[in-house]
Length: 247
Image 1 (spheres, one colour):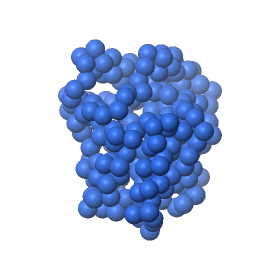
Image 2: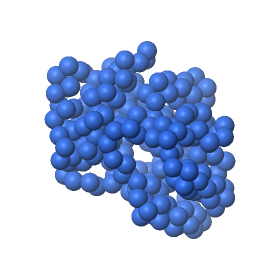
Image 3: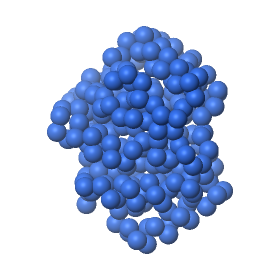
Image 4: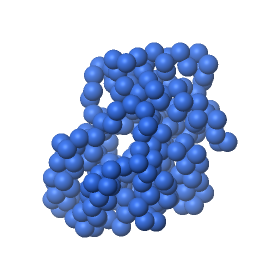
């Protein structure tokens, strides 16, 4: 059994899902994939199930009824990963905005270079974003600056969604207390890991905007993140975070 699980949440990703699965399975290190499928009307689930015949021991799917939010999809995936004894658990989008080859960099950071959480970072070496409108690049970049200022975390890309966690991180940070479901979920996970004392390292990647399918980003997601950061900071004054190595 592989020690590595890539969690891919999907909603209407029929144009991308088969290609991303084959790309991950073609890497030099063995990965398993868990698709968290939120009731896509376009037939995404049927494509995954057909591929399970080809990859019966590597490809898994959890089907949910309707769009329940990115955060809840990953929490469901994390719990599945822990119950199935995976050691390294990855978050990745289905739309090739995250290059599957960069999974190897994230794995190396956690398996060989001392990281507890490895972040595929768009901003650690400048602004490495391709095919985004300038307004969205600025919004994302300034959002990370804002989060860093309010929460006091030394992370250049605080909103990144391409990550690797060592198992101990997800066992420690009390997944049932993670509050946010949208964009702010990514911030909350990093901040919680930071407060628990885990080592977070950023690995430079180039983020390429999707070519196929439709983006799920909207203004409300950014609004949740803006107010959510303030909530996280205030809540941290009253919360006792579990610490690394103290479980």
